[in-house]
Amino acid sequence: MDRIAAVQPDLINLRSYNHQLNERKACQIIQSVQSGCPPAVEDKCALRLYAINRLISAGYIHIGMNLFARQDNELVTAQRQGRLYYDLQGYSIYPDSDFIAIGMSAIGKTGSLFFQNHNDLSHYYERLEQNNLPVMRGLELSPDDILRRSVIHALICHSVVSFESVETFFSIDFKKYFSYELSEFTMYEKAGLLTVNDEEIIITPKGQLFVGGICRVFDKYLRTR
Image 1 (tube, helix red, strand yellow):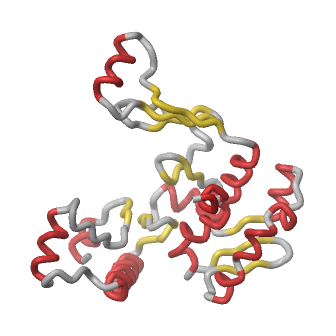
Image 2 (cartoon, rainbow, N blue to C red):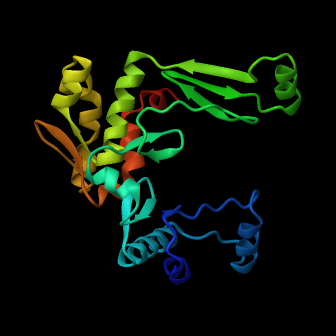
């Protein structure tokens, strides 16, 4: 962490340690050194908290979703000014940009359409040789998808979602439409991760470390898995 702080990179994506013994050689080395015991949950949390505190003390700002940036970074400025966005590539200052997918398995976006290229090399080149886009599958967002994406992005980018702003743009009654989600937030409030009042949902500084998990409450597709 001292070496990273000394280099002063513009952005740091801080991931929690993931022990994948069968996929990563580094994990196999750790496994052999520790006599077959993967790191405990407490140890992983301690590592993450140490890294976060070290980055903050070095002058970095936690934008959200484990992304840290120097104070002079354009993403930090955009967040302070309320014009930060979130898209396929993560945080962005460009609102609702379209993405062209190039390469196998790449994912692109045009408006409310998402599409993924073939992940098989032969199929990928076969489509190109036929002068066709190498698209394997696509998805068009429904009005409900777009509404939920807007709420999730507001929490990810600004740690707050205003009921009135959502109601004005989408012509809904926020509390009725998201009654299930609001009821799920009771345990998050007790844990000090967020607050809910008559006007908005606010994620606390502590909750910003778990914003991904909080936003999952609004993902209705997770309930059917």
